Structure formats: C-alpha cells, structure tokens
Image (cartoon, rainbow, N blue to C red; front, side):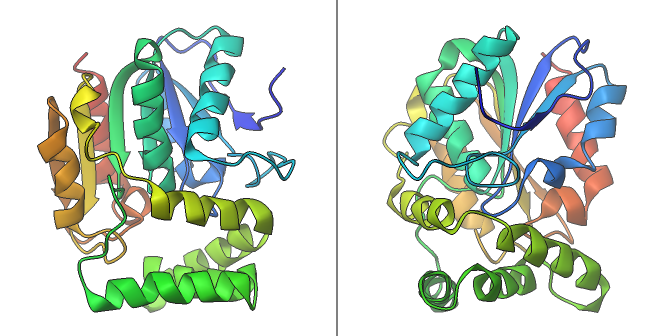
Length: 257
C-alpha cells in the first residue's frame, strides 16, 4: 500500500489528472487548479512527493525514476486507468519520466515551467543555482527557501506568498531536498523526448527567470505532438501568477481529448 500522501477531492471524476508539485512545494500548490478541474468533471489527484509535504522519506533511493515509479504505483493501486499528467518544475521532470516509463498510463502531458536539461542561459541563472546549492548544504533549508521565494515571487504584492513558500520549503526533509537537487541537475531527456507520443502542452511564464522560455521551448522542439503557451505577466509560478488564464488553457487542452 502506498505511503504517499495525496489529495483526491473528486474520486467520481470521469478522467484522473495526476498533479506533481515543484521542488520544496507540496500538493497544496495546486489549490487554484483543483476547483476548475473538479468543475469540469475531472478527478484531480495531487500528490506529495516523498520527503515533501506529508509524504515520508526513508532516506534511500530518491531519484527521478523512483519518483515516477511511486506515481505509477499510486495510479495502479487506485485503479484509475490512464491519467492526464501535469507537473510544475521538478514535477514536470517527474512527469516526463512518467510518460517515458508508463506510456500506457499517460493520456496527455502538461509541462509547466520545466526543462529537458538544466542549463541556465545566463550567468545570473548559473549563480542562482550555485547559491541554492551552497545554502542548502551550509545554512540549511530556511536560508535557501528565502532565496527561492524571492526569485519565484518578487515584488511587494507577493509578500504573503513568499512567506508561505518559505514555510513549505523549510518543512521538507533536507535529505530528500538535497537528493532532488542533485537528480534535477543530472536529468537530461533531450535525446528521449521523441519517445513521448502523447499530446503535450508546455506552459511558460513570459517572465520566468528560473527556467527561461527559450529553455522550455526545447521541450516543444523535441516532443512530436507538443505546443507551447507563453503566459504574459507570469513567472515560474504561472499557475499562481495567472491562475485564471492558466486554468483556461489547461481545461481547453485536457477537454480536447
């Protein structure tokens, strides 16, 4: 039986939608999408990845492959059949691996603010990830969380969201966080993107400074049936920055199946 914590607010929905959160976040990061998905008749299933939120981590075996396997086991246990799979940032990496490892369980793929290979396009981008690696291995998660929150939610109007993100990241298991960071740094799906045959939507915040729109474009170039939507006035947390626009694009894509 799975040890994953997950939200399953509409178990009678007609089609499951597996929701995979970003690094340091948890299932609640999809709060603004759950009502829209339920209203459209879907069955959203938002998970906490091991070591994050309320899912325990045993200290062994954290990898992108093992996280995809955890999600596959969950769907098999719930007997959902094939699901739409959506992931943000780290969740988008796990979603890619899931689509490669479990094509029979993947209907459509939604990749949000994510990449095929972590390779910042600017010096400042490199410095940001170096700072994160240094902080998480020296001063700990809270210090690293403040850096991340400032990058994801800049400006005074996002103050409450920054505080929420800092609190969420700080609660993560440091062992899982460090393993996840290393796994993301090593991930590279560029040579395998052509194996993903399901329809794919890449959603990009025009102002994303964590994973640039050009870096996200490589997903569209590599996946045979993929298109990119660039959302203006949105950064890395596009489902929060522009929730109404994001939900409209999401439902339009998922409903066209």
